Each structure stands twice: as structure tokens, then as C-alpha cells.
Image 1: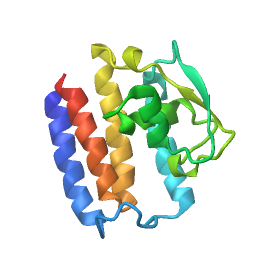
Image 2: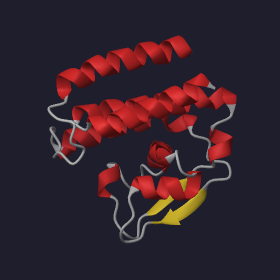
Image 3: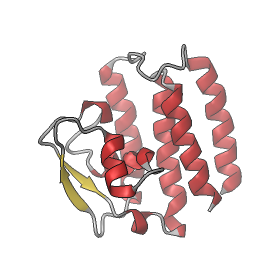
Length: 156
């Protein structure tokens, strides 16, 4: 499994080099929103059954929230970029994590139940799926954060 992640990291790194015009994470999307939504939905379709919802909590988005803030609140410092688990679980509410709005009711999966050894690689795959999307958006900083966390999960 570790070899698969290492290979995936290498491939995505090469793709990132071709698709990123800058290192600026605030750069505007390089792809139209409808295409971006399709990319997110592909990840959600592929991995939705891999997120364990037993013990999940609900959270209502408030003004000033971002997905990384919500993830840090529930999963702790160093796990801010586990928000794709929340996104996969909340796909019926929101598709693009940058478009959350106050009042949205998100599903927050239980971290411990999702990081059991038999499920950890699936979460790493979700993160690499998001990394690929952020690479296509031209956001190499977020791409790097997803990939580092995916590699950390794969190393356990």
C-alpha cells in the first residue's frame, strides 16, 4: 500500500508541475465552477462508501467558518486538511469546500473510527483525490498539504 501512495505522490507531483502557474493559494480557479463541481463529485462518488458515519456529529456553519477551521475544531491541530472526510459525508449539502455558507448543516465523521488501520488508506486516497483537484485549480500550497497528510496516514 505504501508503494501505491509513493507512486501516486510522484505522479501527482509531476502533474502539479505542469498544471500550477503559481504557488499562490489565493489564485482564482483555473477551471470553470461546473467542471470543478464535477471533479469533486467524482471523488465523492468514488469514496463515499469508505467514510464511516457511525458516531458522526452535525455542525451548522457560522459566519467566518472555513473547512479547515471546522476540521481543526473537530479533529485537532495538524488535521485541518482532513476536511475532505467532512465534504464526502456532506456532499448532499455542499460540493465545493470553498463555497460553504452559514446555516449549512455538515456531517462530521468520527476521526478515530475513520483512522482505524483498515480504513486509513481509503482516507489517504480521498486526500490524494482532493490534492489532484487543488493541483488543477493551481493551488500548489493546498495540494502539498493534502499530499503530506496522505503520506502521513499511509505511513502508519
